Length: 403
Ligand SMILES: *Cc1c(COP(=O)(O)O)cnc(C)c1O
Image (cartoon, rainbow, N blue to C red; front, side, top):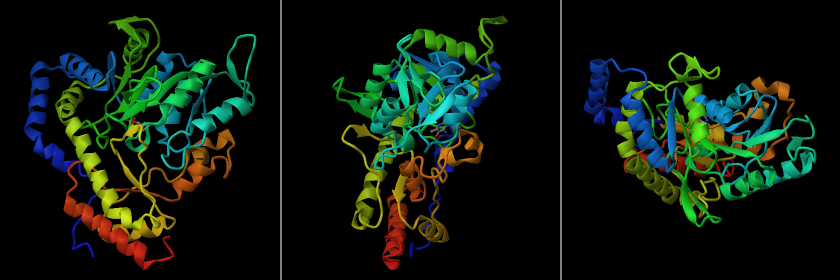
């Protein structure tokens, strides 16, 4: 047994208690200034986060979904366009695409990384699209709509294989908008450029979420767009604030999607610790991999290609007997999660897209097998041992059930 050690899926209490004084001081500063929206706390954080990502601009917004929607619109996605993404992501990815007026189109994922499979992307373009010679644009043959953008999702804290995705984007002149909502600080080695690139610095724009459970989390809702494109940055800052270029001068119709000053202050204080926290997550991932290695045939473990430095927002294993394993872990007071149990193309919300079982076989298969284990910087060695030994017991006792 696990000696009664309780291992919650997430621990958001410990890190906040540790820096409670800092966060209270930020709240006090905001109270003293009555600066709640915008102002120096927001611009200080934006500057610091842009630097962290290696981009010229960062625009703080209200949440990750707004960040995606504003990034898509500002980058140039238009009503009626097709935007390509993956089916195994949080629904916010496709909500943002639809709400920007576009139609989400899925391509399947790679079975080892769970991220967009560049081959499947290429196949979609070659087999289901055509370039119209009159305007040189790529059209989806089924819907006759123009394809304007690709949204790779850096799922679980690991970046998608960006070189071949960018190659396709260049070939067909498509925009690339990164969904970096789970990947603060993740890195990708671009062979083409011969250097490491940080998540959020590769596409024309990228979206981040600072939902409390993310690697960098606010004490409430928050998000940001990063970009190296000044025009895109300017449009995002207007979109978040009712399309204003200055107060009551509306260049366009926007949204109420601003970043709260107190959240920005807290995020800036936490950003100072993010590299260390990500490093602790990587060490915890390594420890899990060592502890679970003996089960390699019975349990699928995360795969980090040589071109990836993942930040392990989630540590996801795979089992054919996932539901039983989950039940047994929960019974031993070990919290788990499933990210995500139903691929988007099979969600009720997307019935109108007309998909069926079998359309994206990899996403479907993995959704039935994945299990997210407890993963956070403060996770202790003792807790990880408890998780691993409980998994070993389950897998070994139910041979061949779990295998
Ligand atoms: C969290 C998340 C979002 C949305 O962020 P919110 O801040 O909750 O709006 C979008 N995409 C992915 C992949 C996410 O994990």
